[in-house]
Length: 214
Image (cartoon, rainbow, N blue to C red; front, side, top):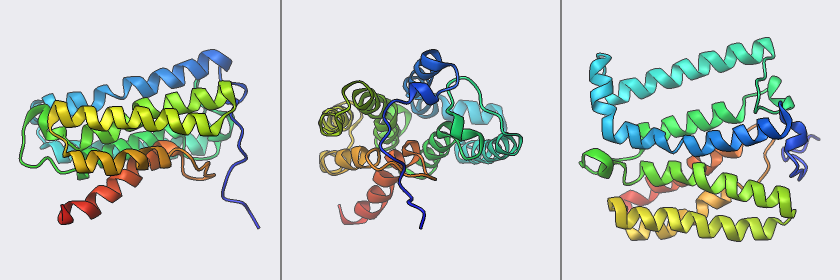
């Protein structure tokens, strides 16, 4: 019977196209993705207006485009620098992350706010991926210590969520409840679903369940 969990192999450098350079590029890509929600919530209306769409249509178009590109990449078995060897035959971490980020932008409520404050949920959801994942991943790689990685991830996640409470008005109770779920989304090593997706989708699902009750 196939085990849906991957073995706990923390040395991703040896599996990365481009070696350490590719691995570093992969980590940098995570950090740069933090710009996506900032641009979307600050300028998304203007950008979508310029393209003759509304913001939701823009995000949906990006998701469809991403799915098509990823399907073609897998069919041709292409991997580029920063990707890992096994991603030639399955959905890449980048695609999973892009899909999850786009869903967060599409689904997370804006509570009727505008500008960056409309990202009171979307921004911390995505920042959890862009900042928590690299920190936990590097600790696991260098220290080979899952418990230390979890503690560091928890501190980073709470810093993100509580920081967003003071910055853009994310409700404190939501921040306290969802910060651990961001970390939980990174812990299991699933074979078919990358943690780039679960780190966003798990707290996003919890958010949508909790909002009617809070």
